[in-house]
Image 1 (cartoon, helix red, strand yellow):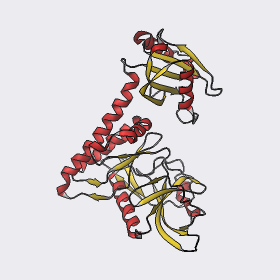
Image 2: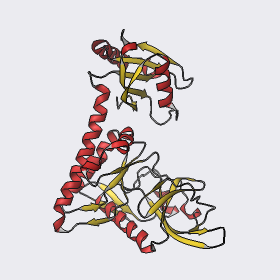
Image 3: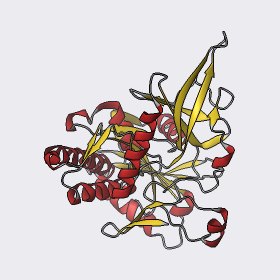
Image 4: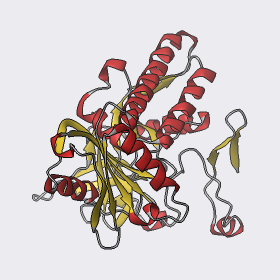
Length: 349
């Protein structure tokens, strides 16, 4: 059974598929707003209803909030478990799941939830502590953002989120803005989200959801927060093409030597006209880099942006940024204190 939001033209919820349904619908990739990016290969039945330190190592949290802490699950790279503090009740996790389902029904993108669990922590003296938890989709490379007040959007968290941002982030923000506009009394307490490494933007961890008629002011504040975040993203990416700034661009060698020559001609023309860009080709197989264009005064310039134009932004080295910056240093090119880095595709460029 699928629940359909006709105004937003999306599936917002679906019942759990049986194996037979999965076979019938193979190739027909339907899913709610919360399912995008979730793995299709997760065997949730293999996760016990009660977890222990064998499956969850509580010495190494990967994130925490006021009432919950997130941990990896052994041999489950696509999943996390959110564990409540021992003093919290099972009602608290059930209530959070209900609120996320409410957001789903409105068309809001949230991480997929899989099952409620118990976690039993046994101390060295044999005492056992029981905690309630929720197994959820792990958002790869996620950077969290507070959106409760416009003035909270600043600092290192913003810089990390902007680094993940791209056109997908902007589309998700625009989608959220439409939802708030269509529901003028919608208010989400402790409004916050995650920007995934692929740019998708998810809303997480709501404290409460209110749609009473007195909430128009809160709705406007949260719409303003989204607009402010959107503006930060646009300003961030505009820097990569700012003619007043200095740039280093690394281009995949195969793109540079493409038969139609369009990218090469465009980039060389822009670089020669503006005299503010170094262009380097790189071979993804060997890592070899070659400077194909640099302004005559490149040694005296302090570069503001470093961009990689790749055939795809998935199969890149985990150390790509470090490799690019190391190469720049070896050439004697200087970096400004507020320099920024991004990986782009040809289409994105």
